[in-house]
Length: 173
Image 1 (cartoon, rainbow, N blue to C red):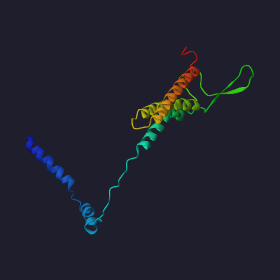
Image 2: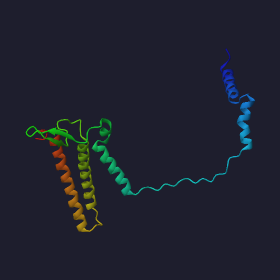
Image 3: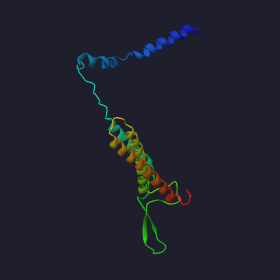
Image 4: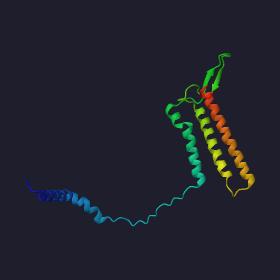
């Protein structure tokens, strides 16, 4: 058995010979095209990207939030009907049903969209209340923003609680 220093030298010489091939065809294919052809001189300019405006980013984030809380992923995977129907026991007529009662883990498409809209309405109410706190606005505008924000929050809360009462009868008393 050879000493370790000789083993490392023999391994390094093997690596050198494997990278430089003895095959003349390989050498010709590797060198020849570049001796005739020369790469062009390109003056490429890096593309410049402008940042989107704050309102564009806000609109994209709000739309994404609406789609997520509306259950778009669930709707794509499960493919529920847009709206349900039930038969009235007294008259026998078929009535449309927007909420799938009694099932927490299922929804119709319209149910998800309406619930998502209420969540977005509540979020917009918070944004309007934030805008009402701006000191550089006129008092009438601040009052309008505050009124619209409080109204949006109240409507969103009341409607969301109504949706829960319809969805799960007897849950909230």
